[in-house]
Structure formats: C-alpha cells, structure tokens
Image (cartoon, rainbow, N blue to C red):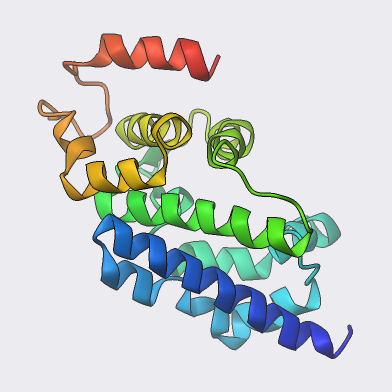
Length: 211
C-alpha cells in the first residue's frame, strides 16, 4: 500500500465530513453533522479503508470487491445510525426492518449528497443536482428493495425527488419546518403496513420516478 494513501484517505474523509456538517447545519441538525462519521478515524475503519483508498469512490466498495466483504463497513454500519442497514434486525424467525428516526434520515441524505460532491471532485467530474436522486434510485433504493422499512423508504423517495426538482435549499427549508414528518400524520403500525393519508400521491410519485 502506498504511504500517501493514509494522508489522502484522511483528507477525503475530512472533506466529506465538512460537506456533511454544512448540510446538516442547513437541515437544522447541527449535532448530527458534528458527530457524523467519527468512527472513520478509528483504527478499525481507518486502516482498512486507507488500504483500499482510490479517491474517486468509497474504499468500502473496493474492499468488498477484493474480499467479498468489508471489515470497515461491518463496523461502520454498526455504530452509525444514519445508515438504513443499521435499522435492520431479526425477530428469531424472519428479518425485521425498523423505522429510522427522522434526524438520521436527514443525516443519511446529507451523507449521500456530500459523498457525491467529494468523489466527483476527486475524479474531476462536475456534480449536478440530479445526481443524489440518480444514485439513490440506481444504488441505494435498488439494494434496499424488500429490506428498508416502508415509511423510511417513502420519506427518502420524496426527499430525493424534491432535491432534484426543488433544490437543496428548498428541501432544507422543508426539513426545518418538519414538512416530511408532518406528511404522514396517521402512522400507527411499526412495520409500515398502515393506511396513510397520502398513499395515493405516493404511488403516483413511485410510478413516475422510480418504476
């Protein structure tokens, strides 16, 4: 492994953390931005990720390609609550998806936007406002099919479409005004099978943007 991989990985995760912090401030969740991804600086994650550092994409992807799994990711998703994979459990018989609290959903959105900006810059590609939605649709949403809790997925679907259509500043304003949690006033059942007032509107959104 190249010695400068340690320094370059440190710069990349610090730049990413700064971008997340700025977005979390916009979203009104300053503390989440401050503590975001601190585990990446621990030996368990840092050494593994530095080994597979490439700059233009997450070293976790490279580690998975090399080994079939990522030790850094196994630790990271276990201690960072802004990853939907953290909110996934087993009830002794079958897998059980757990609803993410809103502050972690917003941190997840900030994380994905920041990652796109940082990796695009490293690869000398121009970032645009459609990329968060495109990445979510093609990667996160596809991989979470049947695994992410329904209402968590529903809110993320809305947010990424709104980012593409309205911009980050407008979405930040809606987050601060609690627009997204208020759109679902009748949530009662923990597994997302409840009747929701705007399910018709949601189905239209899914058909238009995600099918």
